[in-house]
Amino acid sequence: MHIERIAVDESVGRTMPPGLFVEALSGHGVPVERVGDDEEFGPGDAVATFGHRDAFVDADWVHCVRAGYDEFPVADYEAAGTALTNSTGVHGTTVGETVVAYMLTLARRLHAYRDAQRDREWDLPRYKEPFTLDGERVCVVGLGTLGRGVADRAAALGMDVVGVRRSGDPVENVSTVFTPDRLHEAVADARFVVLAMPLTEETAGMVAAPAFEAMREDAYLVNVARGPVVDEDDLVAALDAGDIAGAALDVFAEEPLPAESPLWGFDEVLVTPHVSAATGKYHEDIAALVRENVEKIAAGDPLTNRVA
Figure 1: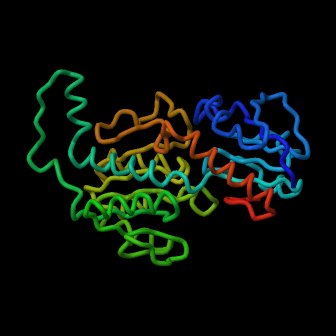
Figure 2: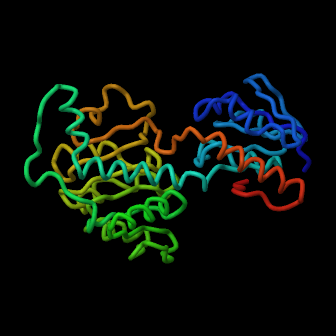
Figure 3: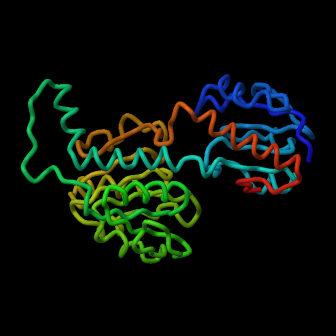
């Protein structure tokens, strides 16, 4: 494979300004250009994109500028001999900090004070409402880049971190690692349950009524994984029934979250618009990963984060 140009699809604008990304990629020996929906591709082309288009499989290499690549037809890329890579590994800090922010917000009641500020009300919490993260248990489901970013920061705050991992292998800063078949045991004693696993056939709908029943009534669900890993109807039912205390949700089965969704209406639910990985330096992080793979192609080395 020999890369003669890097085409930046306009869809990258869903995560960062395309112009900044082109600028960050330029000046490293391979021409970079922005392309639209009507562009065609062939040998020597690399494409950086947010989503899939059928024309991409004619290129030599396609890079997805996000970690999730579930909408890409991997089998088609494999059949065409087109390399497909993703951006896993660059979100540990951003998502880890966002999850800590969610947990601190809920524990220290910052969301309630913000709501009261909007109404110009001096609203004091009930005595037992605020709590500290120190000493509380958090269960992190999925211990890849995202999950480890959460675990490291939660442990630094004095939390007892347990986790769920397919292999069951130990992970630094995680006191106990459960396998997915022990999910309900893993979440049973946690004040926070953080979902950070990829969306697969196995994880779709993984968190449903039985999991909420296993959770503490004062527990909070945090989802920075993918919306479909949670059964949203069961989540709404659990919130309505008081089976769990609340949630912080960055991802949803349908995005944008429809205005009629009941999730908008819960005081103890934080809703953010799929931005847990957002950072003003995202274009630099992804450009560095793309440049690394350009160098690996030139050297004949295996690509980083290759999924097809």
